[in-house]
Image (cartoon, rainbow, N blue to C red; front, top):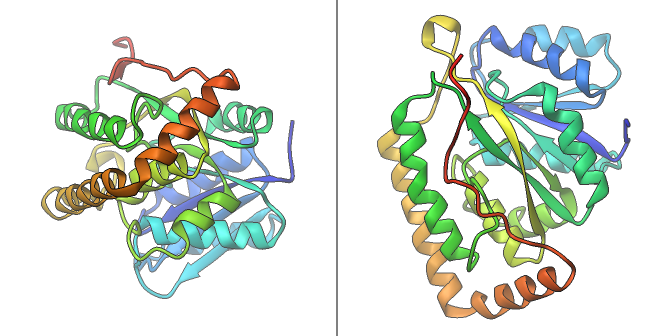
Length: 270
């Protein structure tokens, strides 16, 4: 079922020629799409602008300079909300996330409009081992920050947000504007009383030869993530923990049961 309240937001920065193909694929599964060009300099958005000229549901926003994934997502969220949307499915623009799962995720969001629907990635054999194993620490830290299980994978950016609480908890903050956005937004939404719901989704990783692009820098961005976790844990211990406990009790009373899946799911070998 197509719903006018839900849109897809794709932040993109120098994604290269893969961008246009991903946008076309997304449009096959959902008619309302916001592409947020985060200060790209490679011209990859030109083909998308041409597509938008003949596609009423495709909107292209351009940020004047590269501000980070989180900033791009929030810009798309603000634009979508201004046009009447209440929820946005966020996905990467490089083809790693499954466009074929868009309808399933939005369907779950329509069933539970007060929840955030978080992707739980199923990794294929091509995924680098450091990506699989490095995220185990983040999963454990986030379980601490929300006082238990509930967020199956805080680093996986394929998810549906309710826009009003997302903009309330992240819109005015200075932090969480880059690769720390996915984790910080999920934790802070839990703190604000937004229930997490997890759905499995396959992940694809592309080599450079296949057109894969990654702007994640292990040293710089892992330091940023570490600093974020220090802030979140300190804030939790100083004053957030009472509210988190209260929300978890309320969710349980309403029938919510936190999932405790394996930290990492692997797809069968092909």
